[in-house]
Image 1 (tube, helix red, strand yellow):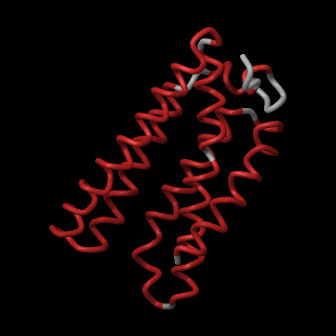
Image 2: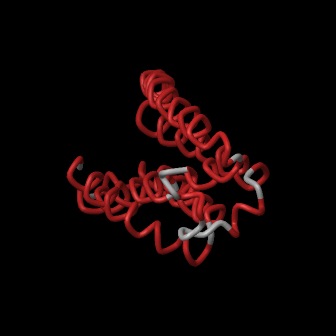
Length: 154
């Protein structure tokens, strides 16, 4: 399962750059969140067979890693003068979520089992999707992978 997550994650990050060029950062992030929500929602029904569970887990991992480059692109383009600071805050928020998320999900898992934890993850993803649809700047959709916002020297 970890091998699937790792391989799919690397592939999703690489594929994300092509989508960034075609769709823009906002749509790429929204697509990634949507894939995560769908994978988390379907996961409880995959107990019928390990291959089905691994494919669903791959879909979940794809969504999780696919949107990250677009998210960083959006954050970097918000204020080019504070790009480093903005990206540092974004990284800190991701790390904070990586600590708090498993704690909260573990509590849901202990309380209601695997099905409840999957529903919880779906709900959190759905909240993130609604937030992205409402809050991500529409102009970020026009940010392309070749834009100066990706210049590491700035």
